[in-house]
Length: 401
Image (cartoon, rainbow, N blue to C red):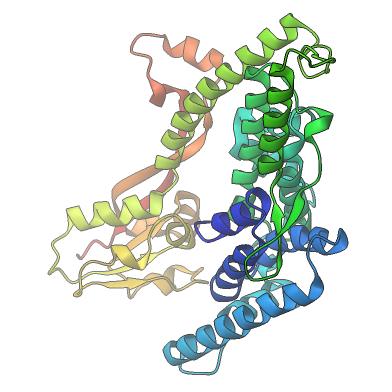
């Protein structure tokens, strides 16, 4: 994200495509190959409209591509012990081989009806309104939509894959808020395409719509300030203001309300996220229950490994942390002194009959309905009462330990 934003700003806001190419090459070839989908559509648009000449693009992109590719292959091959280009390997794994689908698939439009609405929250309608109220937001919105559509072709979907588009959607929402609070829309006179100027190196650079707007606004203001100006028009006559004061008021109230709503929703979702890592909590509790020098051979189930039981929590050198998968029989667990497993699986295998339960960890399972809150009473109502929790993991210990 930190490497993608400077490139997007350079291209979409400043019109500096050379800086955009450098940032895109650095971010895409070294770190995240999917950023080519994010920078590709704006580049194609500039080439198609003639604002960027193919020869200039090649002269700038070729050295960046060769340099970044050589750097990543040289450095990563040393660490991996074989000749490798990591981002190319990841790209082929996810697209050509389509092996990422082994981790689950989602419908084509899942990003649009599930992932992005949950991420944008109340800013989603304002992001769409930005295309109507502020034409300068249309390149931002178009780049984000094309990027998400392209990524939707991959069957395996995760929100983190399209997080680069979130700042673009939020920027479009910010443009809509600016148009609403300034009680104006971008005038047709100000919607001129970016101009071209010759830089010191002799090449063409793009003058941004912001600079063009400043020139037009300045010229218009100086002309209208003259007493001899024949056509001094009011904002309403130019068609730049809102048609209805009521609509303007509703828009401003929604803009302010959506900020408060986003803040409240973000706080609630942060609380939910704190209950989404039972694996990490179970390993941390096991560290507090047992001494670091004890002979411990603990098996971590798949759910624990996916919810926080990472190698960063393997603190004790004397302990053995085992994540072997496919252990479905009770005899498979004989080597272990401790087991962290899901309750249903532990009951089915028989671990709960042969082991002692020394702890349990809960996880988020949804929100309590209004009827549930009424049944419990509103005395001492707090954020935690809104959450419905379930026992996600059991901490089991062999009797002889």
